[in-house]
Length: 105
Image (tube, rainbow, N blue to C red; front, side):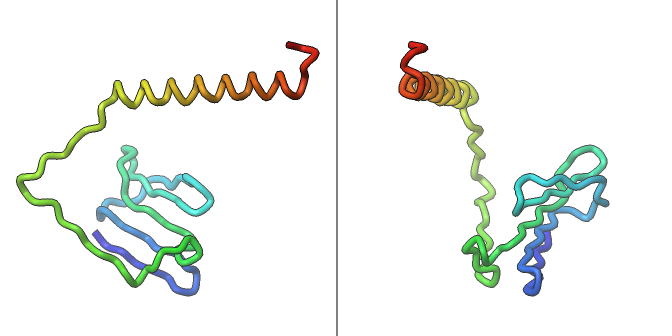
């Protein structure tokens, strides 16, 4: 893995592998990702690093102990929370609609 920072452009690039880049995708206005030809992640480009409040000169590398076990997120819990958020948003939209257009209620 390699991390580079361009001070003039305020851009940080985190390269995860030496595989060639197959394509790039814009994730957000400040984040691009590079993928290999199979869709695997090659690198991350973070734009306006300092503008986002990140100190590019203060990078800490954390290591996971060899005997640590990764915990996968509970997919059912994720689905349940997503459904709850969707239902809350629907109720909120319905309430706003009632307030904006009481004649339709």
